[in-house]
Length: 122
Image (tube, rainbow, N blue to C red; front, side):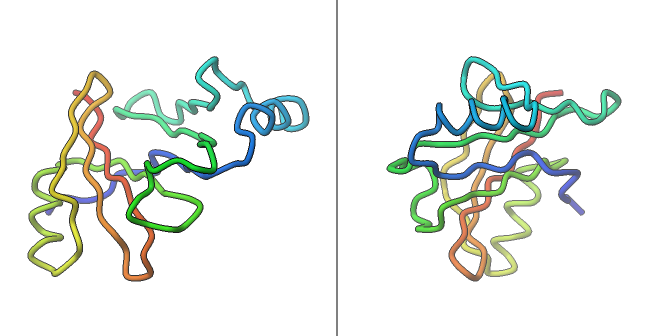
């Protein structure tokens, strides 16, 4: 059975992502990268990592959700998991994106939150 293998990231809307990132860097010591977020390499023996990333308040990236945040989970087999979720009646986005960062799919939870599923590259 395909499954979640870890937290891939927490993404949330912010009125001023750059200023908020700077605040977290200054006060909590987060090592904010040039792109405005933080990458945590939590287990070098497992593919993937966790991200903390503020998005612009008017982003459409979380759509169709109206929630101010989105959770990203690492998964071991994106295609199999999406197939399982569809069979279970879960709302699954038809789009799957592929890039050098891996493969991404999206679902909606029962309360209208968009969940991003990420299969890291091998």
